Image (cartoon, rainbow, N blue to C red):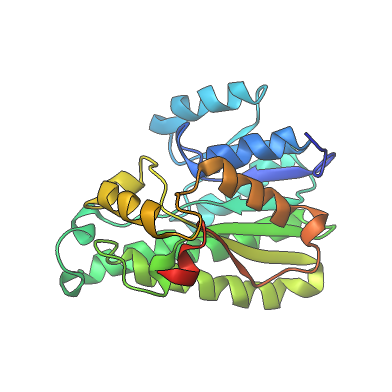
Length: 255
């Protein structure tokens, strides 16, 4: 592979298991010469991420609870000891209460809506705010979104508004952090059979439908999303910020 990211340091959040998009991104960053640190949400989930870190040759692991500003600050303080300079942040975190992903959207609870937006959208602000102090030479922040942000996707429910909020956050952060040489972008991936995605009702039916209707007549893989993310983290995209890049086999253009 090329060394697009040689000599650069990256924090990849959300690599909870070997089928996650974040894990594919971490592997791609490493294959292009970048150094990677991974995060885990809590002690009970640490062992699962340890196995992934070992596959990367012993990548640093940082505990990160994005639901707490104090915890985010502690995480970046710890990261600073391992990586005094950070060149990029990959935000691949999203969550909503299971009950708010069932039934009709109109039944979304107040607490569920708040939690989905807090973890899935505000967490980008919280992590970017702390990470910027290590990004002394500029860099790139990339988050993960989905087409449910701008059109109705059956059973996506409360995650749709949360992703819409996330995409707006990308633009506002791009404007704020641009003068510091920090670019902020999002990758809008087509549906992929990750562990998290399978919590969405009739997800397999969605995959089958898109496979026959996208311009490329197929779905996408985590590796393809990871390659696009590497591009956005690299200097090849040095003039791109505030953007949502679609990696969905063309579905956004025709469906």
